[in-house]
Amino acid sequence: MGLTLASETLSLPLRDPFRIARAEPGAGTRITTVIVEVRDDRIPDVVGIGEGYPDRFYGETPETMAAVFPALLEAIGSFDATVDGLIAADHRMERAIRGHGAAKCAIDVALHDLVGKVQGVPVHVLRGLSAETPPTDFTLGIDEPEVVAERARRAADFPALKIKVGGPADLATLRAVRRVYAGPIRVDANTGWTRHDAEALLPELLDMGVELIEQPFHARAYRDLGWLQERSPLPIVADESCVFPEDLEALRDVVAGINVKLAKCGGIGPAYRMLVEGRRMGFRTFLGCMEETSVVIAASAVVASLAEWVDLDGCLLLENDPFEGLELRPDKRWRLSDRPGLGVVRKGT
Image (cartoon, rainbow, N blue to C red; front, side):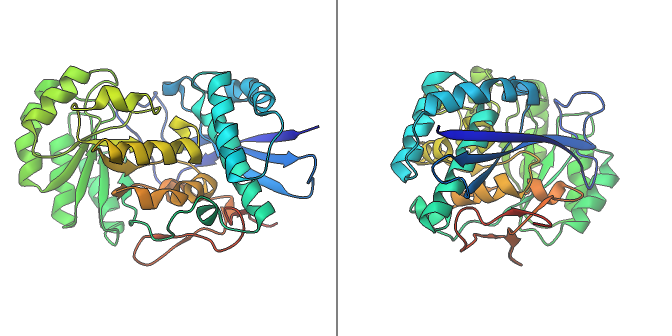
């Protein structure tokens, strides 16, 4: 008796091709994500929905997730459907096995949805967080400069755009986007730059009014990150360098900001801790996502009030999100549901 889990791997097409600097060959047209349903045997009629996005860069696939799910459930053991129970479950999963953020995220999100439904409150209320969040930006993948510019024109109603860079056409792409978009631009190199690239591009980025630079160098290139931050008036934000809570100490006095993602750190609970601790340590906080369905975007929005910048557009990149219930307001802020749990359901149910 206890918690039981059923999982389903989804392969979903993207609305537009979406490539990043460290993408595998052929990637960028579909995504793979894992949806879970978690039940507590004592309350079998209540189902918690969760999601984990397996990224090979972080050592995860649908197969690794399936392999560790039983160990994680065994580690949780008897579950108390309260906030204290959620916190205890996260700590037990962390102690049971290192890493595997996407697998932990799927379970953590499902348990939050389950507890919210059991207690009859939205998850953000359950965790004592505000429903008012910063607006999300919209992300554009690497492509020919004029193609990216056309996509920027279509997304011009977003209050900020995040542009993926890390290739030979970076400057041409950013100039093309700036010709059609006057708002804040955030650049994300996904570990694709060298010191020479950054040094050459920095004056141009300043001239174009770029707001921040995300992960220009390799994940553990702390000296390079610190070198650039010393020279850059723009905040350098760590993403691939900032996976788990223990990474914060290594980034202190190295970069100005951190990008927290549920799929990296293990769900709502760990993201909450990272954002709170990051702010206490003086970091500027960015809440990001993968190309996920609205299950994880809704879960991420729960902690979005703790972030200065928000990049929660994953479900908007999909050709057809299989879930509904999450609403984007005209000002591009996610409207947190007032229904119990996360407030998202599979379409047609």
